[in-house]
Image (cartoon, rainbow, N blue to C red; front, side, top):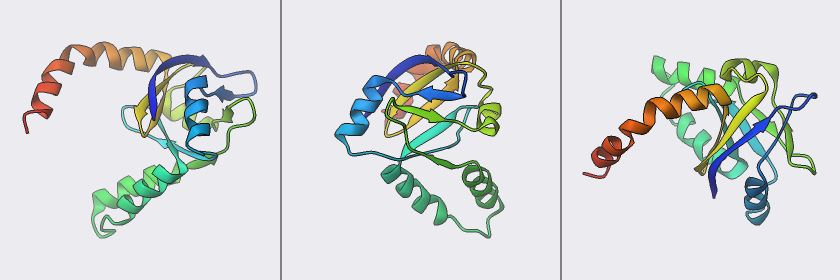
Length: 145
């Protein structure tokens, strides 16, 4: 549903505009609300409401008696906010989430199928630069199942 990478900037009021392709996909799939939270690799995860509910059910099913489960759930859910894009497709990302992801002004918004990732431009370039050479090896290992 969400594919590609797009460079955008945070505006003076701290808002981020979603790429036109993502706005079109949202409209076509009747998505009005998203959830943004701390992701992996110092990016933010943004889930459509329906996908958020699926992820939430999975994480809630993890045993609360397991320390790793508790730690993950605390960090993941304590950072979660719900957002509804305005008519121009803008969302407001709180400062604590921008701080987590190292976002100042320039961002890269990455579509990962059912998930949108929001990266600081510099961190995305670093991740991509460090990962692209291993891409084929990872693909070979993942597809040999």
